Amino acid sequence: MPVQSSNSWMRRWPNRAEVDSALRQWVADFAPELVTVLALGYFGSYARDEAGLGSDLDVVMIVTESDLPFHQRSGSWNFLAIPVPVEALVYTWVEWQQLASRQPRFYQTLLRETVWIKPLENNRGY
Image 1 (cartoon, rainbow, N blue to C red):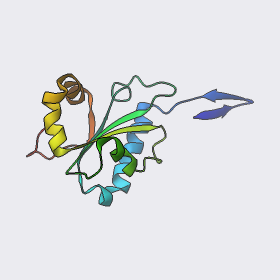
Image 2: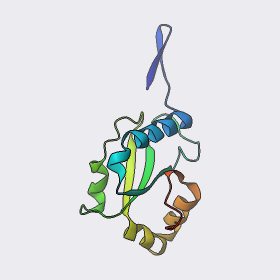
Image 3: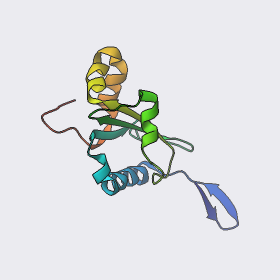
């Protein structure tokens, strides 16, 4: 996001703390609408604190179920309150359980790197 500094413009992109705070506020603001969301977190450059100019926020959501195809699910969520573009991966609980065998390397990356804002309840586990 551009920020004016004296008579010139500098580019300043939101840092991890700002984006983390915005996502946490988004979860708090939309809590009633998140009843089907079992878990929500972010991974990628913001989770690794490596984000730079133009970085997007990679969000992972686990929902109870969905009638929408995987590639259409993220469009159901309004992330406009987040100060950077959001790329959301929305898995059903069944898909999340299958991810370990279908995409083991990606699944391990998610387990290792995701900063969970709304973690799965204790009895479900990752």
